[in-house]
Length: 244
Image (cartoon, rainbow, N blue to C red):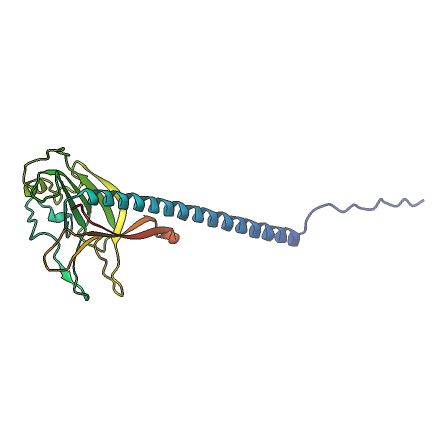
């Protein structure tokens, strides 16, 4: 009597081809997931930097505007090195340059606002405020610092303005006590059709004599990093006049 053996059962599993196909599909799914995640992360980072940039810009412009309105007079210097302890309030200020429209413009990265106890330029000084970029190169991205002197009150101080400004020697000590950073990275407007970058402050006059008619602010605030295009910047132009 012949006894037949039971049929062999096939062992469950995947062939090599099936395993390779499954691995390929899983890799594609993982790559798509990571790409979506990185896109969302980059968008969130740029949005955060944009919000920070706009907030810094609004704060900076609001503060300068308020203090310019309160000022009696102002002086625009080429840069913070001009305040070297031996300042000439006529000869050391930024020189006026004629433009194509017959207007004389002066540019600088250092703005000195002087507030006196009354609107006359001979009254006692109540306070001095200075905004300056810590660089001598207008094309360089640099922080903007703010200095605020002692508030001498309603009566002010009878000390001459030149003496007060010479006591603020930013040239040798740009981080002088009483100063702080208000913008981490900033630069001015780029010249139309050229590569020159203007300083962030300017004033203009109808004559070759400097006036205290208005201060123009044209600043680009920059946040983030240029790596992978994660850079956020915003520009603003504003013109304000001191009180008269």
